[in-house]
Image 1 (tube, helix red, strand yellow):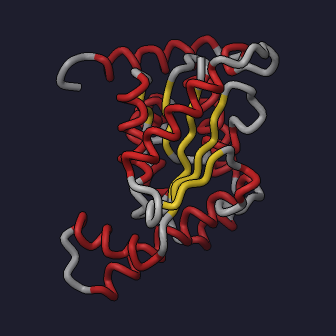
Image 2 (spheres, rainbow, N blue to C red):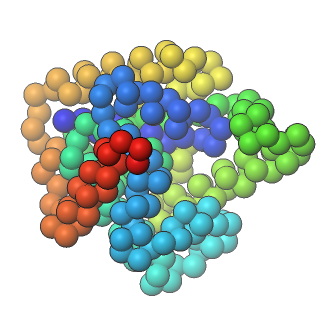
Length: 219
């Protein structure tokens, strides 16, 4: 069993690449929507709104936000226990940093290229508006990781593979990530595997039910 985490800059194409890797390997694809379906079962119905808040929000270490991040970490671990999945975003790479069967990937791209991609995707005509949107997303993601995990998202030492989609085409990125995951899955070590994560039984049932619904046609 192997888990691939994808950390990506906004507009880098990381989510698309992650989805294609999952398809290539026959893995489950887990993004923010899937994680939020589990969090909503525990009352965290506005997590995405909070996650995308201004950097100043994350300086408020109140009980509610601390509990929310703790629950997010547990959800990520409970999902990783299933193995054979691509998990995109939400700090998955740091939550699962110590596990031997996890491949942590960073997808990035030059700022100007990311702006152009976002403008095209979101149908934005103004370059300034595109730049502001990318900067706002960068600031929110950086503040989230700094405040709750004490790390910098661009610290290459946190990742097994760092790809710049301004240089590496999406097809090649998918191929490299899939090859690295296959190689990782062939390692003989059984120490520190995600399958050994101790998960609360109720949370495990909630995750399994969300996955079951995701697998249904038209979900």
